[in-house]
Image (cartoon, rainbow, N blue to C red; front, side, top):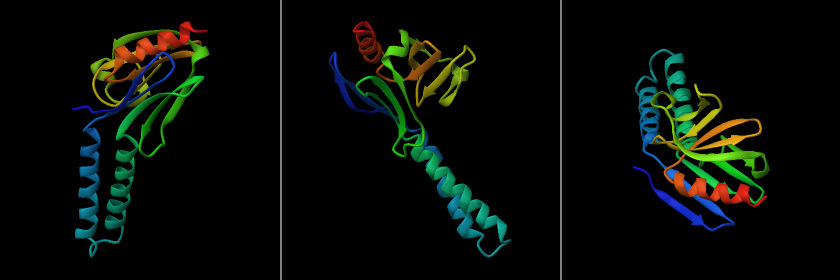
Length: 160
């Protein structure tokens, strides 16, 4: 259940946003924690505080991973989770050595983490990805627009 909100495919620019339902489960957990905090407000002092802080933290975390946007930033590629822009990075096109379409392993799952195959995984939903080999490391960018992103990056690194 992904939704494309913006895609531009020309040799000079690229922007694509992928949304996924995973954050809805985290929002649901946050609501349950906040309801629990209200329900036990007359109990032990620490329990409602712990539940409220956990609920608010979960809501912020869900907002951080609501969607994944990959954008051409001129001399670099921007990769950002959002709408709360806590997790983002950019890759200079000059640092990219090669690009290929791939798939993440089931155990690599979603989020931001190291890959058991080396490098990093930035993935929101699904297993399709673009493997970007750089002068210092590898990044697997999860996307539902892998072919177009790989094509765009190949054109950009070929333009050097």
